Image (cartoon, rainbow, N blue to C red; front, side, top):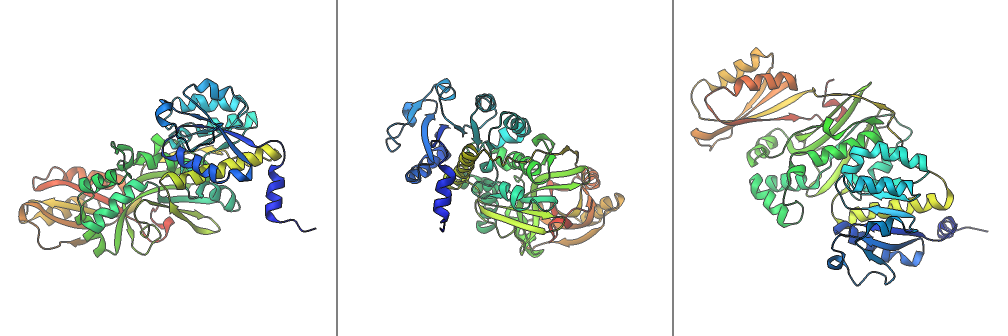
Amino acid sequence: MTTTLAQFESAEYAVGKCCKIALLGFGTVGSSVVRLLGSRSAEGRLRLTHVYNREVARKRVDWTPSDVTWTEDINQVLSSDVDVIVELLGGLQPAYDWARWALRAGKAVITANKQLVAHFGSELLHLAQAEQQFLGFGACVAGGVPVLSGLQDGLAGDRLIQVRGILNGTCNYILTRIEEAGASFAEALTEAQQAGFAESDPTDDVDGLDAGAKLAILARVGLKAELRPQQVSCNSIRGVAAVDFEYAAELGCTIRQISTAKRIQRQIYAEVGPALVRKDSALARISGSQNVVVSTGEFGGDTVFSGHGAGGNPTAVAVVSDLLQAARHRASGVERPYHLATHSCEVMDDSESQQYVRFVVRDRPGILASLAGAFSRHHINVDAVLQRPGYSKSKLAFVMTLESCRKSTLRAALAEIDKFDFLAEPPLNLPILKEGPCDAFAL
């Protein structure tokens, strides 16, 4: 007798009753999860029984099943017979306490809370293993792009040495608007906020903290290295202007917020910040609010994951995918947990790369000689000087590209240059990433 895929899946979920789900947080992602669950209700695998939210009367909608319990009492949820807690509250507390309580109470936990997983993921994974429960966090990085499962399962046969990508859709939207429309950073940020891509307080996004938390998760899953968010060097995109895209184009590049974690024996280099990338690279082709992750394996080379990394629907897809995996775990008892980090690493804060340095000066004779002299005293070679016409002599913008040098050496040179009285603005320096993801840092 031939067994169809549908029959196999039905049999897989047939053990025991359907999986009961409690949802914590009914915001953009939470409502999308409920709608997606509703569209799959005929399958009978997943059943929403509880929705928790503060001011629940204001949040309650009439299109959910009539037997769903809406509540502001978390104890009512945690003491119920639900099988899975879906945590979509965000923040570290009370999400951390409630996730631990749920796991100890014999419930699976699924979360889209990147800060929770970045800071406490290893602890929660150990607890989930001890309690023989499922912990899913596929929605924490790149929204609907299955990058975490891809790194763990799809590339399990390789030894990954680097993960790099565009992990924050807000920053990517802002930078592409500056590039396409010639807008200022402030104008692009306002547009992103009006379009719903940026929060009223965009600090975590534009200063790299959001991407830093996601990079810590990627390093734990992909590189098997214990990396804490506070160990990631984060640089802001606030200083990037339309003129930088003009000069980058002359170099065959564009500018993106790039997150990189690279393992070198028992050391790891981790950084988030704006960088020049070649226009023919996978990183340059990502526009708007999309995300991309490029993993580099010792044997398999580069693998690219890309797609929509933000928004309710893409993130809901990742949450429901984890729910289906939790239901399989409950039905069969077969565990497929994320691998725990195998070791802690010494985190490096120094790298070597070519550099783009943009100056804005009050023009006068001798400026180039002064700058070249400062770089020379720190043994940094100037590669090229780019100067576009049409700028005022009182705010003349031009660029120097530098041959490969270490960040620490460049910082020392720029500290000397900061004392020059002809500077109208502080210099902006960005690394220039080479074509091969592993060639950007000579470590």
